[in-house]
Image (cartoon, rainbow, N blue to C red; front, side, top):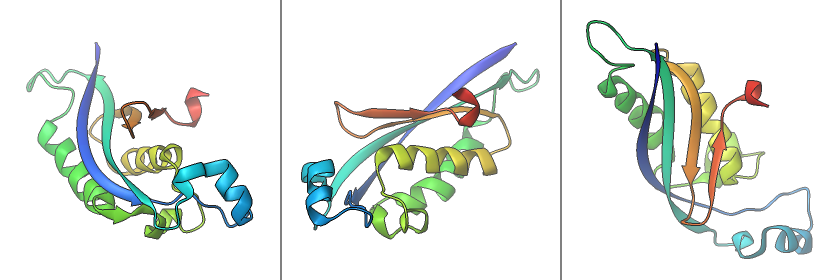
Length: 138
């Protein structure tokens, strides 16, 4: 019996959507106000969904304390109150929320082994959310 667990977390960060591959004019046309040279911020809400069998002894898919600790140390401490353009994985990648979603998925997939990672979902604004379930979900 497989059960899915989704846990929510929040962090705040800023970014500027800008690519060195495009001219200033092209960047403004592609990214609009998100290309502001001073950047802009979001209060991101992340959902991490994992799955697995229910442990017969604990009655849980995974211990929330373990998941919370992993997310706090590996994701929240990395991104909270940061300029995403200055975080290592975005030095050569535009820090769109799509790319942030993929980066967080990869961090969880590599490091959290206590349940199977199903997907990562990020709510950037009330109107925008992004979801990534790995390459195999294509």
